[in-house]
Amino acid sequence: MSRQSFRDLKESIELKDGEIDELNMELDNKNEEINKLKLYSTRLKYEKQNLEDKLDNEINNEKAKLKELDDLDKKLKEKQDIIDDKQNQVKYLRSLIDDYKLQIQSNSENLEVQLRKISKTYEGLLKQKDAIIEKQDENIKLLMKEKEEIIKSNKSNIISLKLQNDNYRKLLDKYEK
Image (cartoon, rainbow, N blue to C red; front, side):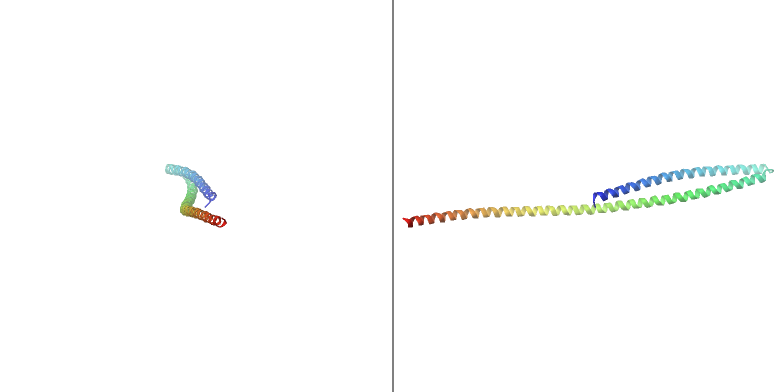
């Protein structure tokens, strides 16, 4: 695997991390909004209770207050629907985050496996290189020995030829005299 693709994968992982951070921030904002809505819902429930108490005390205003309670009830249902929708959004965002985490984990595991394979291949290549160097060293030693033997052989041949040459000269000198 080339360094460039490794860098690309690393950049991809960093981008995914950035997306996860953005989603986490969005999730925090949604949680704050849900908490505000829950507080608002609690306040509305409290107001409803007060209105019910006033209804018991004020029979003359019963119809108007019942209508107001109905309106508040509708608002509560709307707010509860909004809360339910926000909770569904939060669940969806959490599932996205989990998916991204799984992808990142899978990518990391794949990278580790690839790095191990590359490391093993590299080690094998280093062993092959060392074996080739050793073989070349042995060949060089053999060639050096052969060279030395050839030099010795040549020296002995030269000496032998000189001796023969001297013998022939002596013979020639004898025949010439």
